[in-house]
Amino acid sequence: MRLRSAMMYDMKLQIRHGFYYAYVLIAAAYIVLLRSLPLDIRETVGTVITFSDPSVLGFFFIGGLVLLEKGQNIYDNLFVTPYKPEEYIISKTLSLTLLSVVTSCIIHLSAFGLHPNLFLFLLGVTMTSIFFTLLGLGLAVRCQTLNGFFLMSTVYTFVFVLPLVDVIGVWTTPLFYFIPAKASLMMIQSPFNPLGTGQMIYAIGTLTAWIGIAWMWTRFSFRKFITLQMGGGDPQ
Amino acid sequence: MIEVSQLRFTYPGSKEPTLKGLNFAIPKGEIFGFLGPSGAGKSTTQKILIGILKRYEGTVRVMDRELRDVKSDYFEHIGVAFEFPNFYHRFTALENLSLFRSLYHGKTEDPLHLLAMVGLEQYASTKVADFSKGMKMRLNFCRALLNHPSILFLDEPTSGLDPVNAKVMKDLILAQQAKGTTILITTHNMHAADEICNRVAFIVDGEINLINSPRELKVQRGSKRVRIEYTENEHVHHADFDLQQIGANPAFLQLLKNKPIETMHSQEASLEEIFIEVTGRKLG
Image (tube, rainbow over all chains, first blue to last red):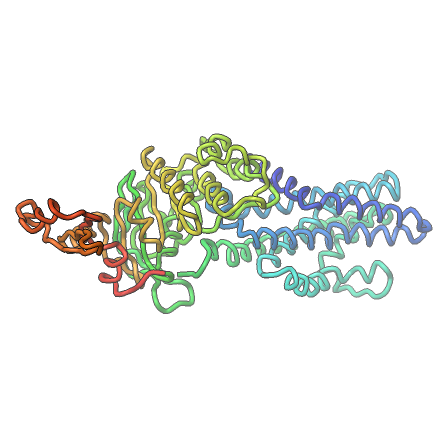
């Protein structure tokens, strides 16, 4: 009940801050771009775009949101209510994930039409979004300014999106299998390259494990950099 | 309502404890003020009583529960207004209050009713970004009352307010007390504390030097004299008289009878003077 209400207000806040308009514009641009491409490279570009939407966009949007709320010192007031930090993390993550899934779905359907393997594709987008939003949240609570966040984010996103070079055919290594983006890309590509059972178990298992790690890290970061700093001013 | 015994607290990584064995008890319905300079331990004490800091030593019992064991349901029973009134700027006053209201499970107050109580009802649909400091402080107070709290924690409630708004805030606090709410105020504003607190505690360097009612303190520690200002030959003069047997003091009675009196003041000490005398420190 509380989580549902918190998510509703989070979405309302995202609308007020223009996130939805930004997503509509970005999605429209992507659809126009994809439809103008020849079919043979459309799939590769579509995969890269669909991956970047929940991962990179989600990561930066959550960073912006958290730093905005940090700047407005809203946490002091939120967490002297029964609202738990875990509920806050879940609400923020799921509200942005919903936005990512809907836009990814619209982009995909507009560019490629309806596929039978859409479930795995959507699951991939959802899990990717959850992972990167948690990562962005955990990083943002450690930063004081948006510039600081952007600087740090290049390091974090670089490592986690590295398997993209495999998709565009530049370079590959078996080590990519340890990086969650590899699993994400396999699931997002699944409408074009259907996955076998083993691959499916690998992809879902890897993303689940990374989401678990990101959840614990973000919860720890939140406690250290938000909860224990509450009450404002000096620590006396 | 609140019982604190031998409360000690040391921040992680710090060698010196911030709180060095506090003892106090606050009965239901009292307005209790924590007075002290910055860094004295006021905020830490408040954070412990609010339930944010739990790794303390000693005993802190609030509503018969040890605070280190309470879960987030404790927040259903308390209201907190921090010094800086922070809100979602893009949301209106009503949206902000409705959002915070939705975080409680228990019975809550209608935000419109609260806005009317503090004279902000016509600004319910105004974005908080367009609010003045005084309006935000009143909205902050509304937020703390959303869940009908049994205990209200107010951090510098009159900070940055003009005299008119400060008076409004004091009246609002007293109205809450009349409803039976226990109120804890942390402040370095002696004047505000003097006006509304039933009892005050002076806290310096993590220790409580004294707890008493402002009136008792002023009477006990002031000189028992009255100062009369009167005019004579177009000049203002003053004379001091001992309060004991003042009704039988001929010089005093003569003065009252024969001279135009300008002012009469008993010479009790101000709370600020007592604070400096007791703690050897200035506030601020």
